[in-house]
Image (tube, rainbow, N blue to C red; front, side, top):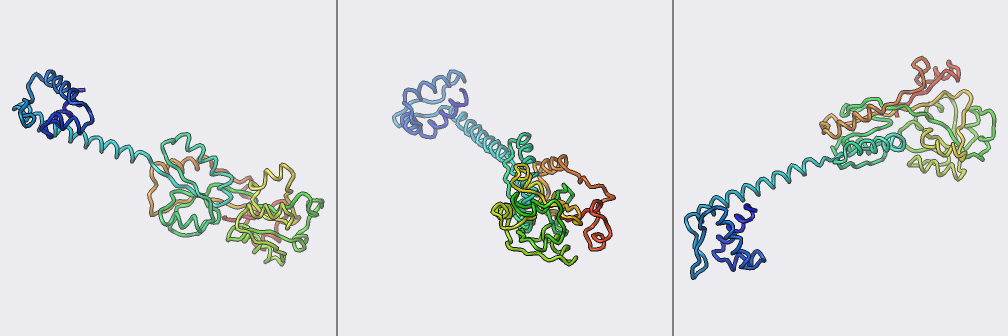
Length: 325
C-alpha cells in the first residue's frame, strides 16, 4: 500500500495539481487527497501545501519526489528483468523424423517428454530424410530420428533402432493365398514402391543385381500412399512392418515371405547438428531417446551385409539383410 501511495504522490507532484492528477488517473480528487493524507501520516511529514496555482511541495515533498522517482524506476527495471527471465525460461524444441520413426517411435517419445517438461514448447515435423537433414543443417531443427542418414560430417549420429522391412499384399491378393512363395513370384507381380533413397530402393537394387526384375506399377511419395495403393489392390507393396502391423492384425494385409529372401532390416539414427549445441531441453530429449533404444532381434552371428555373395552363400534361415535407412 505504501508503494502505491508513493506512486500516487509522484504523479500528483509532476502534475502540480490534485485535480489534473486525478483526471489523468481516472479517480476522484477527493480520493487522491485522502490517500496523500494517509501517506503523510505514514511518513510523519507534510509533503505539500495548496496554492492558487495548484500545490507546492515542501522540502520533504521534494525529497520524496526524487527518491520516489528513483524507487519507481528501479521497480520498473526489476519488472522488465523478471519478465525477460520468464520469457527465456519458456524453451522451445523442434524435433523431426522420417516416416517410419515418426510413426513408431517419436509419438511415444514426445508424449513422455511433455509430461516431464510441460514448460517446453515442442514442435514436431515428419518429412523425407533430405528435408529433415536440411532443417538440422540450417539450425531450424534440434534433434531428429532419421532412416537412411547421409554420411555427412556435419552431424552427430548414433544408432537408435532396427526395424523390419517386408513385402505385403491385400488379404485377397493371389499371393496371399499361396502356401509357398518363390522369388520368381516377384518378377510376375505388380509392385508398389515408395520413391526415395531408402531401404526400398536399396532392396530393389540388390535384388536386381541377382537378376530379378520387377513390374513396378506405381511409385509413391509416402508409406501411407503405398498402403492405400495396396488396399486398392494395385499391387503388392514394400513397407516397414510397424507401419502395417495394425492392418495385418485386422487381416486386411498379409506379410509375404519369399523362399530364399533374407530377413530385411533397416536402421534408424538419432541425429543432431555439430554446428548447433544442444539446449538443455534438446539434451533431455536425446537422453530420453537413448533410454528408448531398441536392439535388433537378430544376433551378430546372423547379421550379414546384403551382397550377392551373402545371398548365394547363406541359407534363408540364417541370412539377414541390413539397410542403414
